[in-house]
Length: 194
Image (cartoon, rainbow, N blue to C red; front, side, top):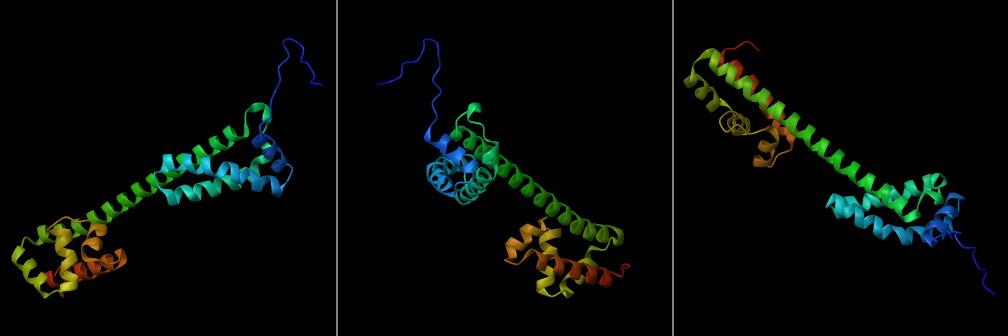
């Protein structure tokens, strides 16, 4: 026979994922395996929507599930459902990942632009200080093709180191090395101090 609730009493239901997460907090690996099966799909979905990158979304999903395993003891069923708690973690992780990727791309752009500006400025200063464009052209002709190409792309076309590397299908380090060698030889040819 079913037990009747008193009028005004509230029945608080506990979902299966809530129970599983409580068991995970107690250290149950079996509960974690079942929770993983139930939650990984939705977590991957939210990560995919935020990141727009399926491979990175898979990584974030793994990170979130690891965090769920490690943080399960902090979960309080009275504060909300387990799935909501896990989806909040997933959203925060995905947003953090986007921010990290953006900052990394911005740093790379800034470094590349700075390095390009330095190489470009070195050549410009040399040319302006000597005021002898013909001598510069003559010295450029003395450089090997592999050293001349990056200088021409940097000085005459204003490309960054990264853009030069892409244009010549060379590693970035090789482009930087060739530019340094070329500028050293140009300075020597032009009679400028090293």
